Length: 178
Image 1 (cartoon, rainbow, N blue to C red):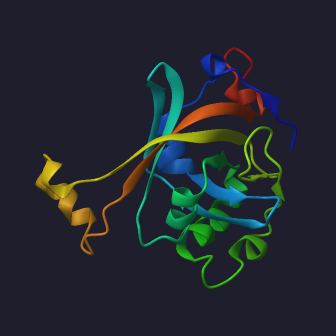
Image 2: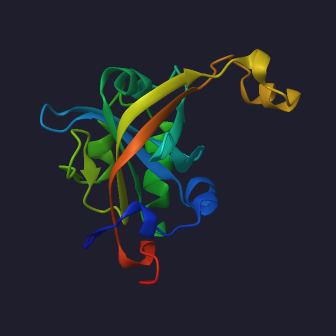
């Protein structure tokens, strides 16, 4: 897959489509040590925080990836063409605790440009991040009671804010180059 570096201010996307319809693959850990895990995410945000471009991802404490996100300083989020939808579905519904789901997926982990967490050869978009903040959701702060219905097991997400260190993607993600 041919991807080019994208300046965050030239990054062009439809964030609601990426998160809600196309999905991201969140990966944390270290490629060199072959100690990493991934999960499919459809909740998160991106923007500017503390004068830095950021991605916020939400991970439940019951997920195996939660351990990696707490242990390692970096993570990647990658998105893929529609042909990988069933792969992302599998990676989001099976646990790396129980099997080598990355090998089962057929995806090819590769070294990221600047972070220890791996990226994937098949990705159309790779965003490399370094953690800069985390916060657990506090149910008493939910202003809409219906949000509690998302947590029947009371496994409230932890938000991880990652400073975007590098973005690479196909040309459709570059402003004015689509």
